[in-house]
Image (cartoon, rainbow, N blue to C red; front, side, top):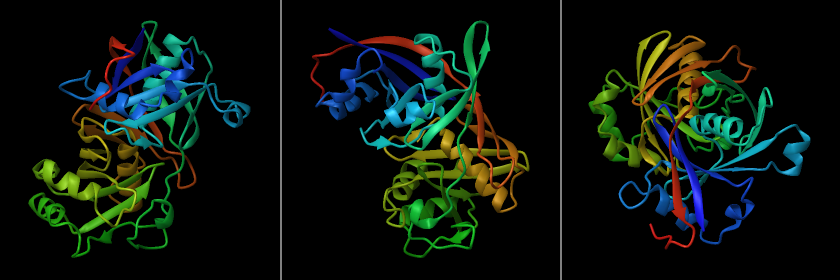
Length: 309
């Protein structure tokens, strides 16, 4: 017996997708965390930023119109509530592999039920637009112990007790000494820098991820504003490390940029793996993300293989 996995990526943010609709037992494997770590390993496994199960929606979500559910696991097997690049590929998987033609496609996530519009090209799904929902600015819900103004933790000073590797990395990048904290279903810390490329990501990223100011750990984004409608971002993703792209992070960058007067309400976010177009029409609207969803290969993994990281 084998496990069939489809490797896909959105702007270089790659995951292995498992069909838990046809094989619901995948969700209930006692060794699921070990399996995720083994499959995700870049040298001894297939290699990915994590594993995503495509499953049937829960009864409550089905009643709300959802036809598919996403469970997202980082490479370290920690489960995340949301992945913007991942959910676009879930829509591609459901459309092409499961024959799901719902439009908009309603997908249950840890963030709630999201609406996605697939944009076919040449008979295949090539791009997807996702309504990522409204940003969360309440410090208690991010969560963070940092404190900011009435709209949330925006442009809060980086305190002197922040990890030394983070502060040194920010200094090297010409950081302005402020951090924007918010959630898009998962927590984000956004640092606007004169030279985001100069951040020593392998040191500053882990320090930011485990910063005690974010009790649930955090995704860290080092951002260079190129123009009112364009920004360049380097990301350290909690549970996965340096990644080619982070969809929720790109949304967080735009929201932080809008609310601090740095970016327009629609902008292109440049990531190492490609570009995402992010729009936030108004403060009370959801954040819209449009980007690619691409299949890499199909993998057969022995179901009874030792699941050791």
